Image (cartoon, rainbow, N blue to C red; front, side, top):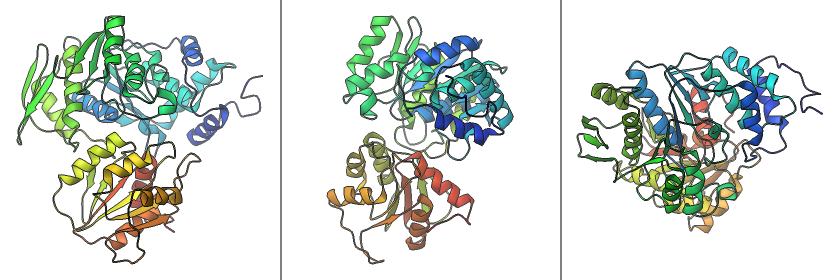
Amino acid sequence: MSQNSTTPAHPANLNEWLALLESRHFKTIDMGLDRVKLVKERLNLQFSCPVIMVAGTNGKGSTCSMLESILLRAGYKVGLYIKPHFLHFNERARVNGESSSDQAIIASFEAVEAQRGDVSLTYFEFTTLAIMHLMANSPLDVVILEVGLGGRLDAVNIIDADVSIVTSIDIDHTDYLGDTREKIGFEKAGIFRAGKTAICSDPVPPQSLIDHAEAIGADLWLLGRDFNYTGDKQQWNYGGRGQRRTGLAYPSLRGANQLLNASAALAALEALRHQLPVSAQEARTGLVTVELPGRFQVLPGLPLVILDVAHNPHAAAALSQNLGNMGFHPYTYAVFGSMLDKDIAGVVAQLKGRIDHWCVCDLPLPRAATAEQLQQQLEQAGIVTNSAENAESSIQIFKTPAAAYTNALSRAGENDRIVVFGSFLTVAGVIEARMRPDIETK
C-alpha cells in the first residue's frame, strides 16, 4: 500500500507539506541511494550546467556561500542548495542569491510526489529531490550542492558533480560514518568521480580519501600540493596549478579556518575557469561581500553577541581559537544547546576555558540533549556552578534558547560577550528571539 493512502495528496501550503514529509518515513536518517535514485530516474533529473558538490565535517556552508557570492559577482545565474535552514525552509533553495518562493518549492514537491509512487523517502531525501528538480528546471549557469551527512550514501550524491570538494574531516556522526578519520574520509570521498576534479582542503587528509580518489581515477587536488595560500595581516594570496590570485582581501566570514574554505572555493573556480571564467576583481569582491548566518557571526551592538553553529569538537576548537583572538572581555556567557548524539564532552573540553557563565537549554527535538544532561556534562568536566548572580562561574538551565539568551543578556555587562553555539537549533532560537521580542522566554 502506498504510504500516502490516508493523507491528503496535495497539502494546502508549504508548512503542511513539510509536516507531512516529517511524518512519513519510519526512519529520520536512512542511508542508501537505491530509493532516491529510482525516483530521480522517474523524474529524469539532470543538470545542463556545471555542478559543484561540497562535503566535509565543517566548512561546507562557508565554502558553498563563498562560491555563490563570487559567481554572482561574476554575473552568473547560480543555484545553491544549502542546509539546514534557520527560520524558513526556503533558505535551503537559493536561486540567484534569493530564497525560493513557497510556490516554486511546492511545485517541485508535487513533481516528486507524482513520480514517487510507493517509494518511501525520508524528509531529507524528498526535499533534496525537490530542490534539485527546482534548480534543474531553472535557467542556471552553475549549481552548488551541499552534502548533508557523509557523502557516499548521502542523497545529494545521486548527481555526478563536475567538481567535488571535501573540506575538513573529523569525528562526527559516528553511528553512520565510522569512528575514525580514515573511515569518515572514505565516506566523504564517495562524492568524487572518475576523470573529474576532486578537491580536498583538509591540511592532513586521511589516506583513505587519497587512495579512493586514485583508485577511481579522480583528478585529486590537495592543499599544499596542488593549491595553497599565503598571507599577512592585510591581504592574502591563492596559488593553484595554473592560476594565481594575489592581493585578496580577507573573506567577510570571520574565523581562523576561512582561508582553507576560500582556497577550496578558488581551486574549484580554477578547475572550471574555461566554463565559468571569473576575474580577479570579481573574486575579491565576492569574498568581501559573502554572508552566511551562524558561522562566527558577530552581531552589532553591546554586549557582543557571537552566533556559531559549532556542534562537534573540531568546530568547537575553531570557535575557541576565534574567541581567544578577540581580545579581553571581563566575562563570557554561553547559550548552549546540543543534540544528544554529539560528542558533548569533546565540545565542552574545547571551550570550558573560554566561558565563565553557562546558560544551557533544551532544544525542540526528541534527539536533543536536555539542559539537565548538559549541566551534568559540564559538572563532569570540572566546571563549578554557583547560583549567585555575581559568581565567577555559573551553570543555569532553561527550557528554550530564547530563555537562555534573555537571561544571559540580562546579566552581561556591555563589555562582556555572549556566544551562542552547539546546534543550528540553538542559533535559530536566538535569531528568532532577537527578531520577535514577544517570544516566550520563560
